[in-house]
Image (cartoon, rainbow, N blue to C red):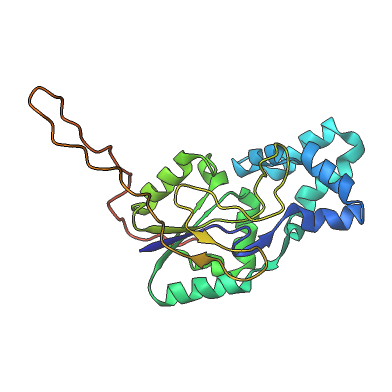
Amino acid sequence: MAVLWDLGGVLLDWDPRHLYRKLFGDDEAAMDDFLARVCSPQWHAQQDLGKATAEACAELAAEHPGQAEMINAWAERNEEMVAGVISGSVEVLAELRAAGTACYALSNMEKESFQRRLQLYDFLSWFDGCFISSFEGVMKPDLEYFERALARFGLSRLTAFSSTTGPRTSRRPGRWASRPSCSGPRAAASGTRGQGPARLSPVRRPPRPPRPPPARRGDPGRGWPGRGWPGRDRPGRRRCG
């Protein structure tokens, strides 16, 4: 068995509002408007796909010169978006590691942020491997992200558990979600950001449809749909860092 961990919202209490509440004060409406229209999830996705944060902020500030200070804060004060470690989840990670369970980090995150956080948080070195969107050029919830991650680590989706939650984009376009959400083809864990550890549980597969009757003479045979998934051969583990 292997456990796939998200980072923001599961192990780190990440939310851009943690920073921008300091800048906007009590004006929540202005902050929400800024995070919907200016530093939006769509804009931030460029950084999760590998674009340098400083470059993205400079380009956006040129488009919105009146809000340049707020935009540049995204790069200059980026770590203030992390309110702290979700200690309960880190304890679960430590217990799994002590038990010899393979653990992997799968996260949408900027290159600079991940490299900086490797130095700030010791538990990020505990993983057997990390698959970070900005280094791979693909991000969640794209199915290719999960396929490539499982292939990279030699895992089968039938033996992997996934803990994925955090301030992703909401169902309303251009909005940051205010509650945790589960995503990915094997999202099998639930957790509440800042309120304790993620709870890991096996994925429940939907019941199979009734087996078709035997083909009669002259009828074309009917088989089960394929359930193939890449990465069945398990290579040696590679540590993060």
